[in-house]
Length: 423
Image (cartoon, rainbow, N blue to C red):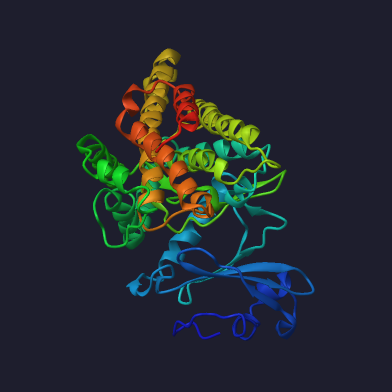
């Protein structure tokens, strides 16, 4: 195919343009004329195709030079596929088997061809449908700990870490989206904002007047932009995870950047809390969701407890970077000093994680990019009632994060809010 001039793929043109690729012929089939192509991209940014043939199948993902959700009026660079590719190969090395296998990458055409995950479904859809998957809490906790620890100065050789920081520092435009759409736009009347109106109007006005909340949102934005601890996925939510009963895989790290360890964890947990509040909008007399709500809160705790345990394990076994060197602690027989430092680091991650979770809950209800958990609740009054509870928990997490001692406390607050009838 012509790799000089960018051209968007379509279901009709893909076989002709990619049919000569040796790797795809091995994975899909030798005769591209017999390939079946189905466009399945329903995200905000990219084209995504499932390509099947007599040998198998693959996913072909192509970035577009604009935000698909908005259109050509919002241009975006094609190089974001370059960052996604590099993030995927690093995540694959840091937690093998947790991301799709990459088949090939074409930088000029912004195309990544990768493993087709089947019979996997998007985790967000499974949770909306009331499907309690048994392994996701442990799998996601392990992934976060391994990917984030092994991409940091706790583990990496400093030269390699700084080289990676330089590489991902160029993902400017996608960081700009997060910096504005997540941390700032929800708290004023930004052009692209939307919310369930008029039902949420009074609460939205209250949140935009909330000085403490806005200050905390900007403190968290400061952390996001200045604390380059590790390679973050950058958009880790339940729409970026594919699952079966037995397997969990993480996809779509095109927002990858060097930032706080706490960011990915907070964004992920926020999406479980939002789904918790959305459950009443999806239940019926024949499909009661009390058990599902319990499962979601249990899963939040499992993710965090697994993360803590695996992070601690890696701290004790793989702490080879420039931070908290063993020469200062273990090599001098001071095991307690190393454990003291570990507890301080984990406590800092926990406090920041709560704040990022709160802000994520707000932006998904008040900003541009909403999630299906709430959006698929047809009755706007019921949807708004669910969203109000999530907004209140989000505010609590962001503003009071230094006074929330455990996720058991968050659970109690969520359960209390769920029982409230909010006008």
